[in-house]
Image: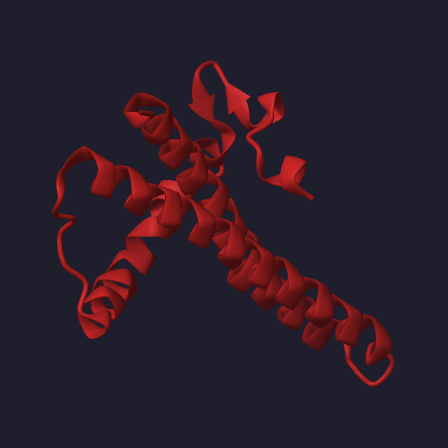
Length: 129
């Protein structure tokens, strides 16, 4: 499973992430307010302590992107399984609506986690001791 989290060559095109072409920056705008609110509620502060502290904080953030991606993957699969099992009583419109909501709530956050992980890994390579 660790290889799954590594950036692949298919996710890059002409030096840019394919997620940028899929509209991840547009999606990020909507999440920005939520992230700032959660950061304040958690009591988040700027990283202090120099290069070593920054490196360890970036490692923690990289791990969090993996964790969040797995959470969204599991949620997407569970909802997909539930849709498959409960498909008979659903109309086509209901099925399509639930499927679309599932994609919006899980696929784009997975893309966002991968996009952010690529950026974090690039920073970690630059800061490596």
